[in-house]
Image (cartoon, rainbow, N blue to C red; front, side, top):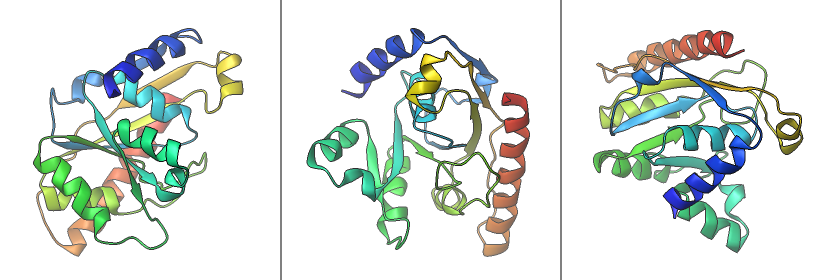
Amino acid sequence: MYQFIGVLVKGILRLFGKIKVENDHHLPLSGPYVIACTHTGWVDVLYLGVTMLPVQIHYMAKKELFQKKFMAWFLKKLNAFPVDRANPGPSVLKIPHRLLAKGEVVGIFPSGTRTTEETALKQGAITIAQRAKVPIIPAAYSGPNHFKDLLLRKKAKLVFGEPIMITEVSKEARDYYNQLLEERLNALMKISS
């Protein structure tokens, strides 16, 4: 279902204009890896997903999105899995670790919420990549955030950064790599604007 919906969404988004993609040569041809993207609205999730086709992303999504039965079913068909951001339990690490062990790609929005302001990144992306011993690919999106923005045909741009290879497993290393990811995302946001 992911591929079918992805191709359908790609066609719909093209009606509103093409997305400009830069540095996609940084993307490995296959997983496992974590993709850490900026998050300003729901449209960035769609553009990230269709840009990476045929590679499928398994997205971490806030549990509130899974409260309605149909929406929960639909999101699961699109490879999303719920995370309780207020009370993160073991599943926050177990599910992505299991997916990465199977060679999949896990998508995380490290700011934890939609924001146009610089906010401190949560350490989940780094912790997950560190435990699974996989690279993180930073990505920054700029463009339409909502349906109204799509109708106004705002230009969309997605910029990928160089993979961050995590070589140490310690709290100090986690802090260092989180800071590095934040710096890379901020630099990519300047390029994508």
